[in-house]
Image 1 (cartoon, rainbow, N blue to C red):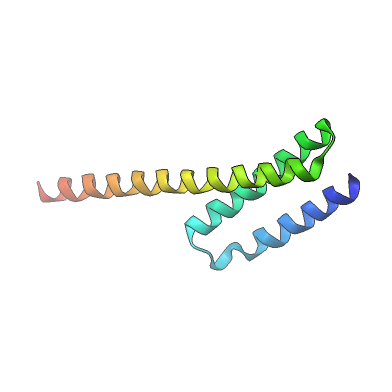
Image 2: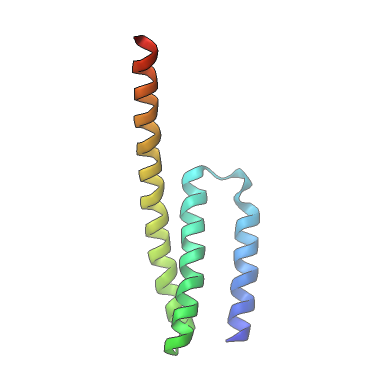
Length: 89
């Protein structure tokens, strides 16, 4: 358990350190996956299988990060449309 936690912390640290050249979509999906894996590992450790919890949590986190990114892109497009319409008036 302790070894898995150390590996996850190191992996997350390295992944987040490499986010500088990523698009916002990539950053949000990676962040969601990392948070999901961490949360899944904690819940999995309570249930008895941290690795399985991390795998499931990571997958759910990736999907959640992607959906969140699409929502934020939609908000930005709506804002830009409203801004452009306001400038035309």
